[in-house]
Image 1 (cartoon, rainbow, N blue to C red):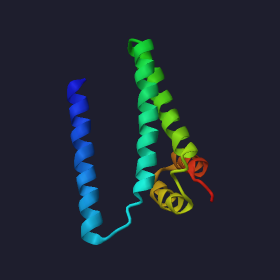
Image 2 (image 1 turned 180 degrees about the vertical axis):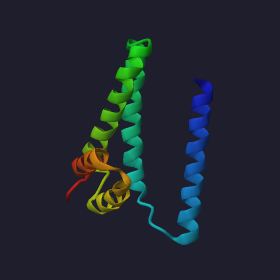
Image 3 (image 1 turned 90 degrees about the horizontal axis):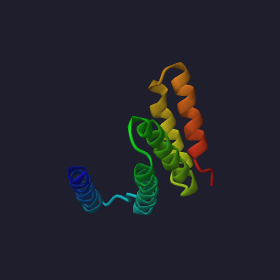
Length: 117
C-alpha cells in the first residue's frame, strides 16, 4: 500500500511540474480550476472506495468496489460540471474508434456527462 501511495504521489508531483512548465513556457491557459474540480472528483471517489474496502473483503469485494468507484467518478464529473460542450466534441471524436455497441455506449456516457451551459 505504501508503494502505491508513493507512486501516485510521485506521478502527481511530476504532472504538476510539467503543467507548470508548459504554462510558463508556452503561456497557455491550462484551465487549472477545472483540474481542481477533477481532483475533488477523484478524492470523493477515493474516499468511497477506501470506505467500501474497510467494509467489504475478498474477491467479491473487488467486483463491487470497482464498478461503484467508476460510477462515483462519473457522477462526480457531472455534478462538478467538469466536461463542457467543447470537451464533449473532442471526446466524441476520440470515441469514433470504438466499434458498434461500445461506441454507442461511449457516446451515451459522454452525452450524459457533458455540461450544456
